[in-house]
Length: 132
Image (tube, rainbow, N blue to C red):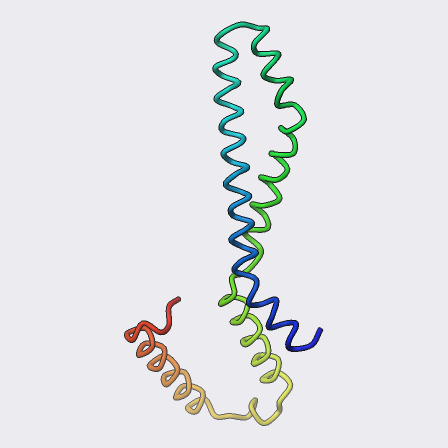
């Protein structure tokens, strides 16, 4: 996969995640409607309860499976900003681990770089250009 394809899919992750959560919401609504209808039908008569269960039987397991699958997908698909952070930090960490020159940097230089990056991020938060 080349860089253009990676960037394309990274920019689509937010839309995919939104769609997954929408399907999850519809699945939850379906399950709630089914359970409310089941409770109401149980109060009326046994014949009504059988009809209600028969009407939802083909859809019930599909709704439950969609609910579980979309919950898992919603949790494990990162947002675009998270994916960019993962790719960027992963690339930097891989570079740092393989580069011998960076491993010999003095501790004071690393501390200064950390302090500078913390100050930079704080300024960006104040401007509203960066958020956690």
